[in-house]
Image (tube, rainbow, N blue to C red; front, side, top):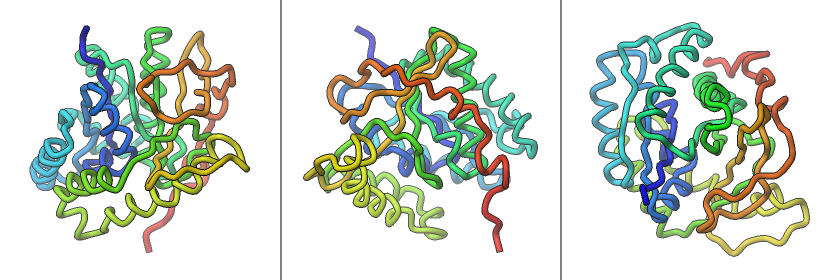
Length: 264
């Protein structure tokens, strides 16, 4: 039986270890191939080689396969996000046919960061182009909360240390902003928030050290159906529910409508 493939779409090098790393590690432990696709290594050519080296080392530590899109295609540098997304969807389609993933993990199209949202929308567009042969899609949130989290991954302090060790390969990025604090703090907060956000307010809490949340959706018969609330178990791809969230996923994000935060 062929090894199942999960394709992770990283808007930037390091997002594979910030967005939903515990979930990717859990899939790896269950025998999945984790293919991390860096959609951009930055706008400046002089930075790309260094970032590619760090990303390759981070993925080696994590046990992921590392791939990067052709940075000469204009995907990384296209100022117009609409044109960038068109290029990105075409590139993702080519990768899909090479790797044949049954699961795509990507940022939410409502994640506030414009490049994260562009990758999220491209993931949606990829699945819609594939139609009923589309892979399952798991969305994570970083800069914006997920509006409808349905999937929770519990993990231990030992696993957190493994994630942070892989993240430390990005020494340049960590000098600018220590994302290790973010990964730890968000996962700690989710140990309290996730049971109620995923399973309903008033739900029983968890004794897990840390938790990560995602939104599970599936494109079928022209509609996006929301996954049922659950913990990640050995049944990785459980049946989704009947709630149609097509309007939510396709609607313009706050960033598209009003812009993102402005640097001072």
